[in-house]
Image 1: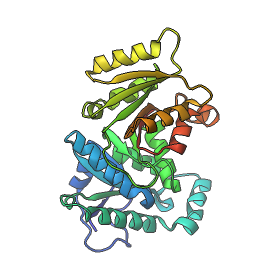
Image 2 (image 1 turned 120 degrees about the vertical axis):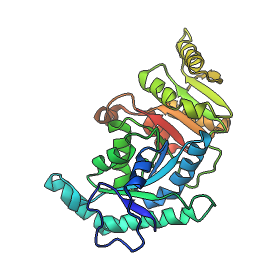
Image 3 (image 1 turned 90 degrees about the vertical axis):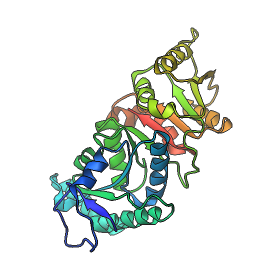
Image 4 (image 1 turned 45 degrees about the horizontal axis):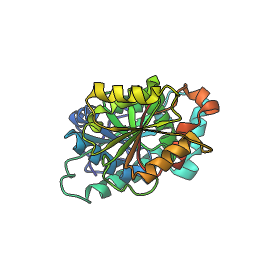
Length: 300
């Protein structure tokens, strides 16, 4: 296997297999990549890698892959957090076992298409929030799952709320391809929605089709007006459509529209409020993540 252990721990744990490539430049390539597939969970590794490859190719950019995982032996944390991490080993295996499963999924993916052989897997284990920062703080787009094992859930929280990155969440099951065939933007004139569109500009510029969806617009049409102005400012071409949710939720309305219009990707501003308030009030983003059938690109 080809991977590099990053700053999550010592340079070579005793359990590492032979044939490992150690080079600081691999980590440098990883952190400076345009698109990063962050792989905390083997169950979603392939879909994250497939989408990352498409996203990087769309902008003629660079792609990298990195595993991140919590490791109680390398963490500086409260005793309760250490105990929680140790307890999960019964169901999920040790940190090294979890990494090996991700590494095998990565190697299997590399064999699926020519040209992937030069891609290496970076690895950071220890304090998960520090690992996430180490791997993705300079990356323009991070691909990561929102559900899965504990590392996946914690990683998604850190990327979105702490790093404030543009993140692309793969759909459940197999990724169908054609990421930017038809991008639907769920629009409301709020700061987090605008940040998401601006951050995704390079990818939107390569999309075959863009539709900005305004659900339950105000009587003065301010949602549609601001959407057209933003597209104009960013030099993007797209349709602006307003619909009423009726007796459906906003999240259900967005997903129904995306399905009807054969959208290949959904772009939204994620979670208007902070994390803890969203646990009480968050509705639209949670619904979209829980019921998604297509990739969702978002930014907090």
